[in-house]
Image 1 (tube, rainbow, N blue to C red):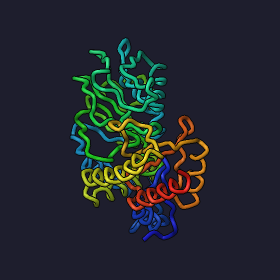
Image 2 (cartoon, rainbow, N blue to C red; image 1 turned 90 degrees about the horizontal axis):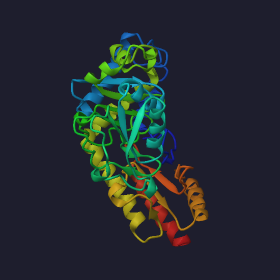
Image 3 (spheres, rainbow, N blue to C red; image 1 turned 180 degrees about the horizontal axis):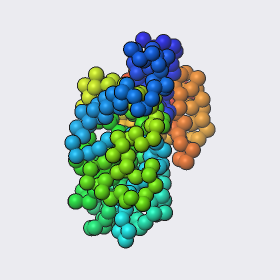
Length: 363
């Protein structure tokens, strides 16, 4: 049982963490069992931390079925730093990178890549206010591109890729910050996957990078040391002091995922939660989903009410009833329920009950 009263946290990130993980971290905060020091005090060069790091890597490799020819790195700077690191390391002189523009964060990735080389926006749904994912037939891929970049889940707009694009032999690079490990993933389809941990994997401050080993050869010796994937891989993410506490929590979260039955089990739970909420949104028309149905995200559910004033009232009353973080992103407005892996099913059911009562009194 939780050690204190908790609201239902629908925040897009930093997001809800599993209560068992928080409670274990609380128990062990002052001193790890058998160590006599907090995890925040131990050296990142110690055997204790090396074991914690190895466990986190092994858990991710097991959960996602990461092949042996991929390296798992823990970095800092969030996805935003990866927007620069990806082209710095993978976009060679005179070559082109393809980017698919599906929302705010994809646009930011494009802007950063353009600072470093030639970018082809191979597909975009901007004209549709990013309310859908483009079809394969809409993509205009560069045959000899250095890589193709997608954002697998668009946190602000509430859309998600259901089928990965066919990019032939070109490495597929993905910002998977908001749906990383939310369901089974075929890592072999990617050259590089990255994402901030603060949605599904742990606290903010840790960035997971999964990169195919052959791509490490593209990281030139002239790159800044800390921004070089090859250097980070050679040093097992320990070139400098990493976010030791964040990696420790990530290890606990991945243990929790394993205890539930892995990514197949969490995918079923996520589908069930999202279906419950989308069914309520579609029930009468009082609520209106903003993403086209075939592109709807399981992680970030975006919707509108008949007026902005009513949306403000909804957010205020929901917060008072213990449903926090439902206000939509400032760039698009509306409402957003982020229901990542650790978000409890009873919280979704509670929100649905609240929505029905709100409609009854305000509809």
